Length: 224
Image 1 (cartoon, one colour):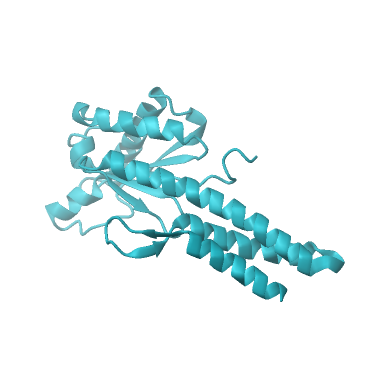
Image 2: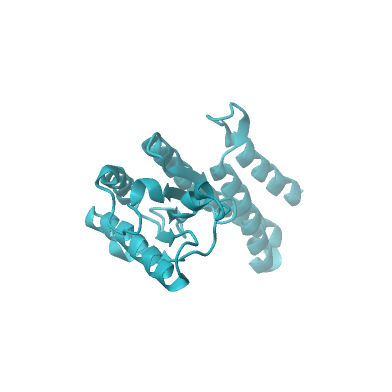
């Protein structure tokens, strides 16, 4: 009976989180509902393991608490993803949800962010970064990872330094626009982790990029 109640709770969270994908028109379960379901299952397991002689009751309490916690983080990330998609539309910046980490990733091609072999941000791109900084300041519960990448032209040492300098440039710009420095980490990866074939200019252009990961908060914002 208790297992049925926990299952019903998880199913309810999933059904309540059904949304319509604005890009495909298909019905889907939102990330918040997925987070809520996962939180409910984890909470139930923890409750059952620590509930002593009242494991059934503890599992139900744990499921409810875990569902609220997981759903809260998921809803927070869903809202931020929606805002970022709207904000980055038409800028050349791709916004993706990382299904493994839950982070919102922004992929910024080098062609719009930096001139060739330079690490100072293109003036034409500063407005986009300023808008991004406003959103990151509003949703201020997460850490932000800025990653720089290059193509394979030139030696590894040079590309490593260039990628780090580009990541630093973007991170420092966000910080100057009001994003707390304690939230931001900049890492250069040089020519590692290519997303396309470096044997063509089109592929190398894709590999010259900066990525920003907006990581999920550890807890529900406003609840510890």
